[in-house]
Length: 200
Image 1 (cartoon, helix red, strand yellow):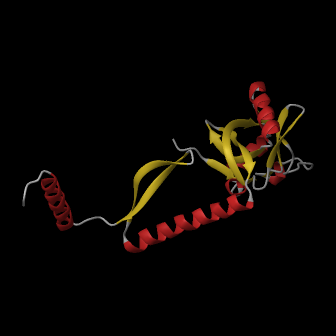
Image 2 (cartoon, one colour; image 1 turned 90 degrees about the horizontal axis):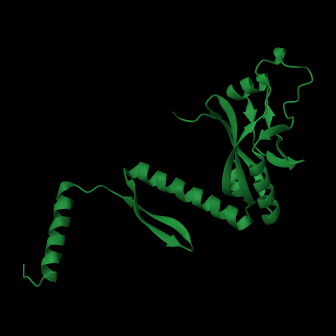
Image 3 (cartoon, helix red, strand yellow; image 1 turned 135 degrees about the horizontal axis):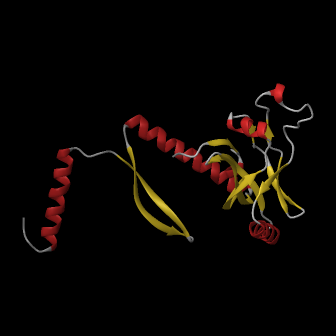
């Protein structure tokens, strides 16, 4: 069964390099759960802060599902507690403080009827990194436009290492017709025969 996303943080991957993710529960009022599940949650520009050894989601907006049945003093942007084990909280504190990292909510989603938060352990991108992100998006957009306009296909050619990272070499390809395939086979046969020293 596909996981349903209730809200996402669209700039998170642009502004930050996400190093690791962790799933957290969240403490919500009953009417807030209905608000989230009906698409009334917004986490753009939010962050997570650990206060008194407890993680909190700061700045998220959850508009009431039924305003008439919502308490008059309800604050849609109130700070909300996240649910993690003590071991997880301790690890997050140690990692973020030791390496100057930030905790970012990436999305709110459903898991077996419960609202969960995907937390990203992130490092802020520099201007150069952001320019690279924009460049890659433009390249992907151009590839998609070219393939759709000319009936071409994107084919993964190989996986290779580049500075410790796994990269994929992608080919923009056009499917061969039967005649082209026969010509390719013929050329390969001739090449094999040449290598064996047999005259054709």
